[in-house]
Amino acid sequence: MGPCVTLPLYPPHMSSVHGLPGIGRIGLVLPTGTRTSSTTEGALGVGREAGGRRGRPATRGANHEGAGDHLGTFDMIAELARHAERTGFDALWVEDGAHQELEACSVLGALAMVVVRPSLGVLVADPFRRHPSMLAKQVTTVDVLAGGRAVLGIAPPTGPARQFAEVLQVVRALFTVDAPTWTGQWYRLAGAANRPPPTRPGGCPVLVGPVHNDPDATGVGSEGRPGDGADGGSPSDDVGLELAARYADGVIFAGGADGVARAADRLSRWCQEVGRNLSGLTLLWAGDVEAGPSLGGELRSLVDAGIQGFAVRITPRRAAGPGSSSPAVVLPDPDDMTVVAGALRGVVGCGERPAGATGRSATDRSTASPPGPCGPGT
Image (cartoon, rainbow, N blue to C red; front, top):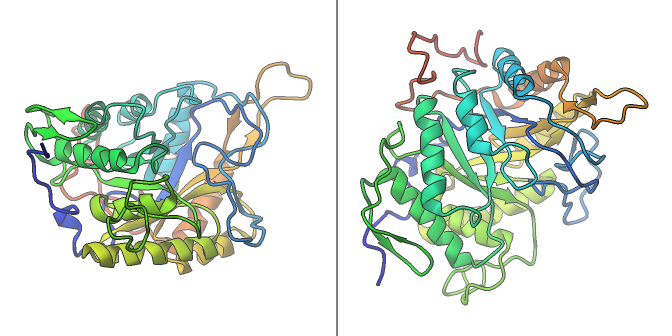
């Protein structure tokens, strides 16, 4: 028995829009967890360098070196969020995963009471760790608390590709359909009510990523176009690209500009395959950056490769002194945040307020002035 709810191939309000208002183009990833690995590939997986790309001095992999790096307190996160909003960041992202000290949607719900303009995004949810109905409810709650500012990033599948496709469709159904019924291979809904629904028409934006350049990637298309994973095969970046073209509002890329350009070209081919215009998808890049002199050039190369916005983790200055036995608190320096925000504005401008969003928290019903042309207060 197939799904009882029929969804369009992709969100209808995205079919002719260049990027999605409300995702935010100048995004900061807030630190919310202990890093337990010294490898260059962290939760986002953006440390993987494919295709023999050149070294990248200003933008690096997702994980900072060192083990046991400690979050500190939520007060620190809140103050960073306030400073980010004052500085002009129009999106705040929180990582989701078992290695994080605090659960992403809980942090975002709290931040909805702290900042009133930036979008609040999950970067990125494991598609199989929660039932998709629970994931949709958590993100919807953030959206309602924040007055229509929630964004959901979902990682490409590490399990069956068709199960991931069901996750995307179930989440979208709960965002857009009142009490949908769904009977699939992995999930079932029987008149599930997601009330109150997301604030914005069309629900919360959904992005798939991070996606790297993988020349051996295959998709799940039944006829091998452009990938060749007719049996659902091994998960790959191309699976994420195909399903993003079919069901999502955008894609999160990682790695260097050359690899991003190749992956964006594959995404364009998938969009052609499913009858969708690539301009209807928002293309973000996620990874670490340093507030150095080469940052502007690195960001510009990514924009030239097709990137429209960024979710950056700023390499921190460690707070623990020599000889300290406690874990180092790894927080970005406020001055570095100002420098990075300026570099981002220089290459992408700023984002737009979500259509239908109030741009303030559920506890702040006062009139908030709209953001200026390059962020709040301008």
